[in-house]
Each structure stands twice: as C-alpha cells, then as structure tokens.
Image 1 (tube, one colour):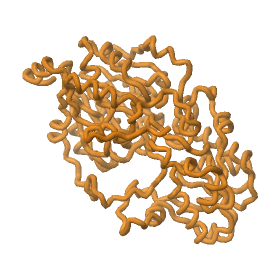
Image 2 (tube, helix red, strand yellow):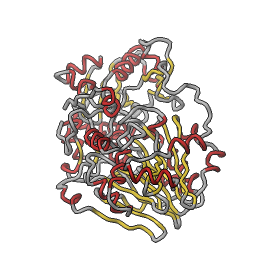
Image 3 (cartoon, one colour):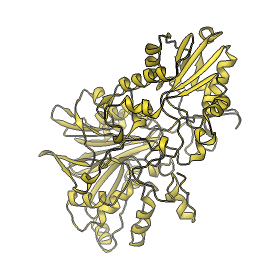
Image 4 (tube, one colour):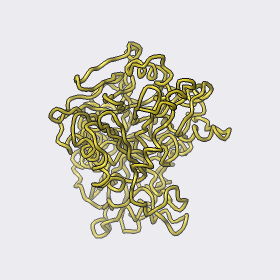
Length: 522
C-alpha cells in the first residue's frame, strides 16, 4: 500500500503514482546486456511480422515465481524485447523486469527473491510505445485503491483520445504504452471495489486486449468482446493458471481447463474462480479471432481458439497445394512456422518434404552488422542452406507470409546462388494489403509488398521466383473451425470490426508529446 502522504496527494489529484521504477531499482539486478539498450548499431534484419505479447499468471502456489518463469519461457516466441514478473507475498507486490530474453533477465537468485504464492508475467514485443525499460511489463502501480499490476496483450485503438482526456483531468502517466490507460481509468471510477473499477475501465477502452492483472488478493483475466487475443485457464493441483497459450500449461504440468470467453472477466482468489460478463459486451454480433494466430504467431503445439495450431497449419498447406499445384522435386519449409503448412502441402501434392533450410535458433531479432546495406548477412546469420541437397533441384518453398518482402527476396537469391534450378514460392495465407491496429507491428499499408504492387505477377518478378501462390481467403477460412464471420481478416481485406482513431500508430502516444501524430492509412 502507498504511504499516507502519497495517498493524500492522490485523493486531491486522481493521477496515478507509479511504484514501478522504485521497486525496479531495489530488486532488479540483471546481468549487463552484451548490446546496450537503444543502441543505434542494432539493425533489425528480420522483416517478418512481429509477435504480440505473452501472458502468464498463477495463484495459490508457493513456487509462483518459478512457474511463471517457465510459463514465460514457453511463450518466448510471442515477445523477445523485454519480460517481467510481479509476485505477491502476503499482499506486498514486487517486480523484476528488464529488456532481453527470459533466460537473460531471470536467474536462480532473482527468482528466489521474488517470493509469494501469486505471480503475473509478461514477454513483450512493442506494438505500442518504444522498446524501452519503462514500457516493459507487467506494470506495477500504487494508487489510492492499493497496489495493482497489469500485463496486456493487444492494442487499444482509442488510446490517444483516452490519454488526452485523462491528462486534462490531472492524470500523470509513467509510460507510453496503451496498457497503462486501464489502470488510470480504474482510478477514475467512483468506487473502491475492484470489480466495479475494472468494469468502469473496460467499458471505455476499444480494441484488442487480453489482460492478466493482480492486486493484493486477486488474480484477474479479461478478454475483449471480439476475442481478438487468446487467453486460457489452467489448473495445477489447487492452483489456477492463466496463459496466452496452452503450451505454457504443458511445460509446468498444468491441465488446460478452457479458454476465457470473449467479453468475459474472471476473478480468482481464496474463494475460487468467479466469472462475469458485461451486458454491453454481449451486444457484439460476432467474434473477431485473429486468424494470424493460426497462420504464424502461436506455437504449433498450442490449442488456440479451440484448435491445435499444427493441425490448422497442416490443413492450410493441403489447401494451398490444391489451389497452386506445381511439378517439383522437393517441398522445403521456411523454419519454423512454415513447417506444418509445408508438411500439408507435401502430403496433398505427393512431393517429398526436404529440410533444405536450417535455422540458427541462437540468433535474436537484431544483429550488429558491419554496414547498413549488408542485409543479406542478417539472413545468412539466421538461415543456412543445405547446398548439396538443393543444387540442381526444383523446389517449392512454403512460408507462412510475406509482409515487406525484403528478407524473402534475399533468401530466394541465396537459393539461386546455391544452384537451385527452379524456385516456386507458396504462402499459406492471402496477401497482406492493409495495416493491423490490433497488435501486429505493421501500421502502414505502404510497408506491405502486396500493397505496393498491382498484381501477383508483379510480386513474383520482385521476389525473383518462377511461380508464386498465395492461399485464397476462402481457402484459408475453410480450414478453420468457426464460422468465417468470427475471424478477423482485416490485414487481408481491410474490413475492421473496430475502427482505429485517425492518429493511431505504434509511437503515437510518444509523437503527440512533440506535437506530431501518425496518420492512419487503411
């Protein structure tokens, strides 16, 4: 709980007073990074779509910090910029977070210091706000109603308007993320009740969110009414767990119970699990499950939106083979997310599957390059070719998506240098032509290769491949469990279930401070 003088100040001014940085200085003893934070020498060579974030929470377990560490480790693919854990030890919340991978930020000493039987964890890729330590999550804040932490997966599309309104009434923000808005709105609610405060906040935010939160005695999970982001419930003995993906439960030995339903809010404490729904949330006529979770983001061994991801991707590959058949010697997957679709393509077409591209799993998303124009070095660092397997062959390369196209083009050129006779590129989703405002890091249409070129043939020539085939929208949706109206396809069709405000963008909460804003391009 905050000190008395701090409480008094907050009652006069409803701004939130962050306890995050002070706790961070006292408990954070992470090892120094080999690459300094914010270094301009760090060049991103990977133009693949960036992951959202990964969430984990657990209650009623004396090994809460260790299990949260494992839960985050299993979901490292969802965010590699920063991570953090908040623990609850008899009502006292403590945080440890830093930039870097889970295995770098946490060690045995750190986890031993994070005592308590409740915990919330987060792995981050920044889709709103810069990749700096103050934006790392979970956010831990002291305010007039106590201590609370929040971990958020997704993007709010009315964050600029909300922040401007809150600042006019005295709110002081500690970060440039949209996640902090939820706590500020809770502080504005004219009630000290946790449930009523959260309902007040969630009625006012719009967009995509899966939330895992914790105060002195309760673990909370919430999902937006359209269900863009996955969130699931698990059970480990007498402990309840929350996670973005079920692979986290598998690692710690927990049992997958069910998904948190779209528009559902669950509260877990010593009395058990209770669930509520807003009547306003039930007014949504459809869901908007993010189809890209199945195409790319989720681990193949996770159950997402009621289906095992690997099986969905295999069906996508089978459908792709029916839509774009070709004569070839091998089907070669782009590791790792292209493997399941490549398997399906191989099984449907009868063309043997071959591992012609090997991925270096010990490479992060950035790499210090000797020159700005040495992009192909980054690709070769991450992927290597089996030249003796590929030389003189006709191959079908199966990948999950092409976003900006530069990495894929370099990969094709390297295949040509390795002596490949023919390169036939197959993509297990439709062409990306529109920006995503719900958590995928491409906010401008101008960034997308399919938006730059008028025809498939133009893209094929740019990619320097013999043939190119994208899975059709109808073919992709036919491979999924739910009705096609219950999936978000905005990045392919431009049809948004929730429209973003006009100046919405990844850095819009920062650029507004300088009098600048990003213009939305639909």
